[in-house]
Structure formats: C-alpha cells, structure tokens
Amino acid sequence: MDLILFGPPGAGKGTQAKRLVAAHGIPQISTGDLMRAERKSGSELGKRFDEYMSQGKLVPDAMVIELMEKRLTQDDAKDGAIFDGFPRTVAQAEALDSLLAKLGRKIDKVVVIDVAREEIVERVTGRRLCEETGREYHIRYNPPPPGVKVTQRGDDTEETAHKRYDTFEQNTLPVLPHYEAKGLVAKVNGVGALDEVTTRIEAVLPS
Ligand code: AP5
Image 1 (cartoon, rainbow, N blue to C red):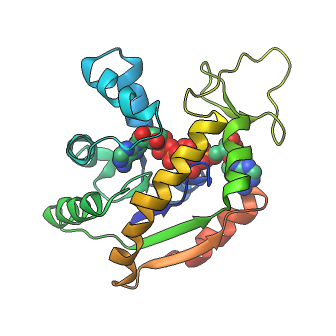
Image 2 (cartoon, rainbow, N blue to C red):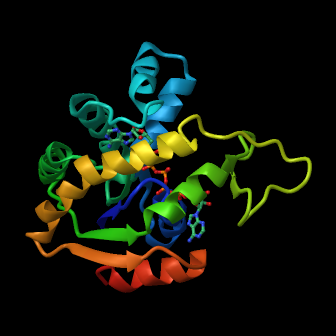
C-alpha cells in the first residue's frame, strides 16, 4: 500500500505514521526527517535545506524530488510506504505519480488529518524531543519525565509555526484536487486521543 498522510504542520502526520508502520509492514518516509538528518550531518546539502526550513519555507521541488527518488528505491519501501510531509506541491505530486508508476505502483489513499490553526500552534510550540531516544513529548499533553533532556525544533516557534501554516494553505492545500479527481481523498478529525485518531485513519484505509 502507498499512503499519503496529508495535513498542516503539527497535525500529527509523524505521530500517526509511526503507529501505522508496524500494523502495515511498510516504512514511514518523512521528507522533513530526511532533511533534518542531512542537516545534522553538517553536509553542504543540509545547510541548503536549513536556509528554507528555518524560515518555514518549502525546500525547492527539484531538491525534494531527488531526495524522495533515492529513498523510495531503497529495499524496505519495495511493498509500499507511508508518505509524511510529501508531496507538498502539485509538482511533487506529479513527480511522485511518475516515480511510483516506474515501480508499477500508485497512491492507494490520501488521508487528510484535519486540525485547526490555533490547535496547531499550541501543539507545535509545545513539542519537545529527546535526542538520545528519539522520543517526542509535549510540555502540556505529554511532559518529559524529570531528568530527561529535551530540545525544541528550531522551526517550532510561534512565528514560524504561523508561517508554516500559511505555506501549507498557499502551496500544499492546492495538491488535494489532484487526488480528489482520482477519488482517493478521505478526511479524518485529527483532534482527540492518539488511539482515537489512529482508529479513524484505519477506518478509511483500503482493506
Ligand atoms: P516537516 O518535518 O514535514 O514538518 P511539518 O509538516 O511542519 O510537520 P510536523 O513534523 O511539524 O508535524 P506532524 O504533522 O508530523 O505532527 P507531529 O506528529 O510531529 O517539515 C519541516 C520543514 O521541512 C518544512 O517547513 C519545509 O521547510 C521542509 N520540508 C519538508 N518536507 C518538504 C517537502 N515535501 N517539500 C518542501 N519542503 C519540505 O505532532 C506535532 C505535535 O503534536 C507533537 O508534539 C505531538 O506529540 C502532538 N500531537 C500529535 N497528535 C496529537 C493529538 N491527537 N493530540 C494532541 N497532541 C498531538
């Protein structure tokens, strides 16, 4: 199965993708995670990603598509993938269709995780990460245990959260008609307990 989790920054795409990985035996492919890993390596490419990411702007399509092509052809993605944060433009959606067609595949479902802007800003600004374990926390909903050292993503400030949401509305929402025309889109309410949201997503996936 090839599944797109679609939604604004902080909608819970990454959280829910991780929950679906084990159940469906396919990997999560997050372009944001791939870019952060490149940035952490200190490479020139990582520095170029950071110029856009730190401002809440989209990384140019050609760079993202190249990154995706490399990732999608790795062995663990041979039976499908959960795309998280990709595609974010119509050009990326068209490129993904071509990449999958070359592999004899196509997108099976696009699940829109629906969360309003005010909730998004609250979620994103409260997010914290433990670099050692990779676990994510939220200062209000899921605070880190005492003694656990956490950091905040550089783009999780209130100002950048709003910019990222604006970018989502301007550049990424226009991707939806591409998939609506194929009858592939299902919208789920992204507010509620993590288990509830997972159940809503599972309910709309192809059997
Ligand atoms: P990316 O890393 O993709 O970030 P994003 O889309 O902004 O998404 P997030 O990771 O912030 O949120 P999420 O929806 O995964 O939510 P999460 O599960 O973490 O992109 C970052 C940047 O990279 C972009 O701005 C851009 O510059 C660049 N980029 C990446 N992909 C690109 C592309 N394709 N093209 C061009 N540029 C690209 O949850 C968020 C928080 O909410 C967490 O604290 C979580 O614990 C909490 N939470 C989750 N679910 C719930 C719930 N049900 N109730 C309460 N809290 C919840």
